[in-house]
Length: 118
Image (cartoon, rainbow, N blue to C red; front, side):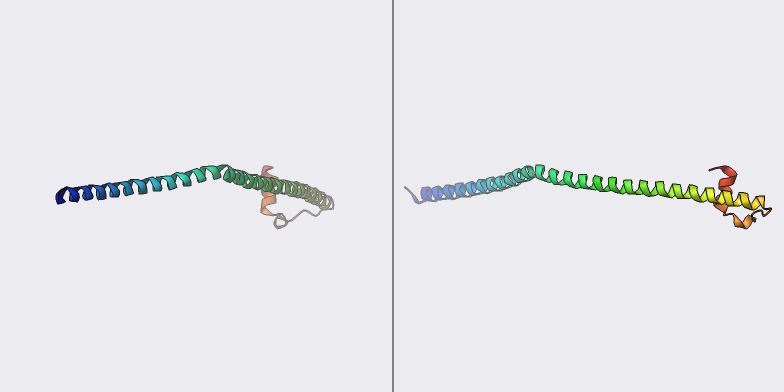
């Protein structure tokens, strides 16, 4: 075999080795990416379970807080009605005794409520 043929054979072998190395590297990268994707997909149900637990815990907390607020609001409304009833009785007694309330004795919000009913 001639020197040129050996040179060409060596060159072809080297080129084939480089091409095989490139193909193998790409396949390895693709395989690693595929493995990461498979791991991500495998982790999704667990992550969804965690997300759902957090959402449920948040919803339960909001429900508890809303219940507390409703209870407090109910108490405040009852107290406001009691104060209103008491003030109404006191004004009635004062008027019966001939002592009308002075305009500055009545808060602007109360005056507005007495005028409009709301």
